[in-house]
Image (cartoon, rainbow, N blue to C red):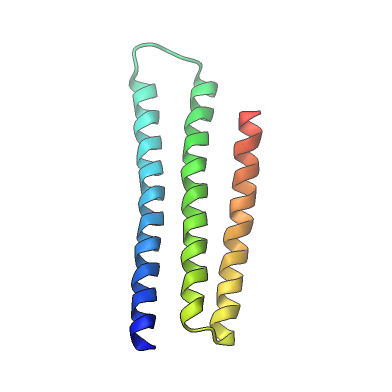
Length: 111
């Protein structure tokens, strides 16, 4: 059982790192796009360009949050005691609410 627990913890860590990398990539991409837009010689519509940057960043954040939720769910398989399940439920609830509102904002800016 200890081997299974160790393997699942390693898997959860890898999944969490992947989620973090996706979020970091989105932030770096947004910063680069923003700076490129601001330093560009040709002036495009600022509002449209900023909304495009926000949509792309929001999509990365959304994907990262979903991956973090998956890692939390997988980690609860190893040690399902009530205190950890309660903490997991709170974390998943908060991340799900954040994900929902972020998804709504991305949809509103698209349509």
